[in-house]
Image (tube, rainbow, N blue to C red; front, side, top):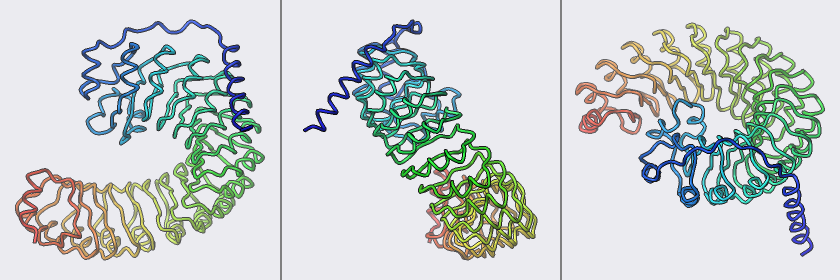
Length: 472
């Protein structure tokens, strides 16, 4: 009982703080709400959400009860040319995208926080204290306030009461220690603060005890040894530090002590052998170093000692035989080298020795000799989805691939001879989901293949019907 009384008292004090700190300000000029006819079309999935610049009280009330939309596919045009926003929400369900709305009344905010999906209010450049208190009652899947550049202490205290699944505050470029402490107490599962470029020791200490699964500090460019040590107290699954551009040899083993599922250090541009040795002691599932452009053979040998499931080095655009020999000795399940644009025949032979799943999505073309070498791949899966075309001879070589999966989803078309060769594919699964059309000859040849092996998910309706006609 005492606990509930204390919580009630804390909220009363918060309310008093909000009221005392509220400062009337001149807000932006209110735009006219969307005409009702257009709004009704929008609710039926026939309008442009990017055109919503303002709401009436009735419209806000309707949206609070709205089930939301699914972003992706035909909805790609909803957000004009803002590809980044679309990418962030692609495939999301129950989304309410109100990024164009620049101001809301308290009554409208009260209606909108009843929405139970992901609510995007990135057009709001600031909040009033009363709005922050209203937002504290939001219990939907996610809330995005990426347009808010700063908070008052009272607003931070109110947001610390949030219990939604995701909270996006990537527009914040600064905050004080008290605000960090308040926000870190929110009961959200995911907290995104990618706009912060630097943090104090006190802020790091507060954020490290955030109890959610995901903490993103992708804008922080450097951390001290002490700050890294404080971050090791974080007990969530994901801590994103993709903004770190460099680390010291001493910080590397400290970062490796993080008890998180994925270590994301995509901001690093280089890696010394000492740093690689330190990071290799990390015990999480995967390590992402996609910003590293080049590695020495020694650094490659050290990072290959990492014992996690996946090692991502998609930033490497070139690598000599020594580096590839070291990396293919990695014993994890997945090695991702999607940044490699080309390889020599000797390098292809070296890559074929990797024992796990290998990703070479950056290769646009391969030679006949490389196809022959890679057909002898000794791992589990080989992904070469950047290859857009293969020769008849390459098809013959690749058909002899014997492992679990060969993915060539970038190939757009095949010849009759290639279809005949690939119909004898010896591996467990061949993916050609980029092929759109098949001739009758090609459909007949591929129809002879074991249907459990071949994946042709991109065929148009005519070719699909033709292929199914010849399936054995």
